[in-house]
Length: 140
View 1: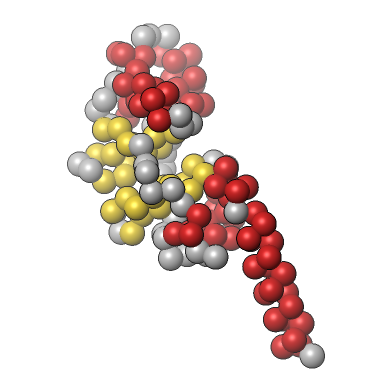
View 2: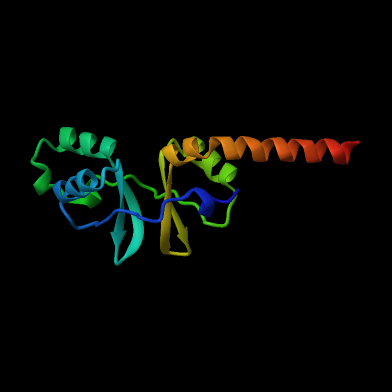
């Protein structure tokens, strides 16, 4: 199974120069826990609920006064739509991220979240079983 099979294509974005308050408004309106931060229409970072809590605490200023780029998670960890889901899931685990933008070169194509992986777990398990059965046949 490939990343393109499980990713969401309706990605919520916010410009790096916007205020964190605007980004929070977008998250609330869309019912999501993160936004992809863009710079010149290219993915440049992620802003998550956790990032908002951290920057609000650290800066002790209204969110309307804090630019998104000051709160953005860096470096940006991405996946390609053509890579196997298990590779993207391993990257999410290794990098300790729950939201993985999907991009081909610099073009944002979607996003994979931990929730997307949970929703696809039955299909992923079936695929893993098939791979194991094929390996057993080759070893026989």
